[in-house]
Image (cartoon, helix red, strand yellow):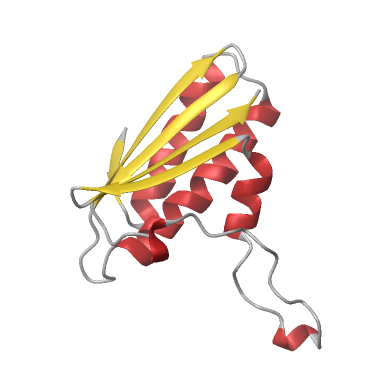
Length: 134
């Protein structure tokens, strides 16, 4: 499955994927987990990989197997800083609620909901592979 990394494109891709996963017989809980993980990863591509005025393509491949799902996201946007997946540590939530961060929880969610996570950047392409248990 492919889309242009925009909010609307990602929303449509996730909706189509959810339908396909449900038709394949996956539980609502597994479908929800896949949707959360891929929404976070895809929104990172839209927000950080491509310039705001020039969104590019992102491709998603999902393979269902006995233990769960393997997912691969590829794009031609900017590489992750340091060429590594962010650690997924929780942001600082100390202090008044008005100073709480707006974001910073995405990689924490991705790390906590996947069993395997791998990233590489080769020949101008990003590849994020992850496994979700069913």
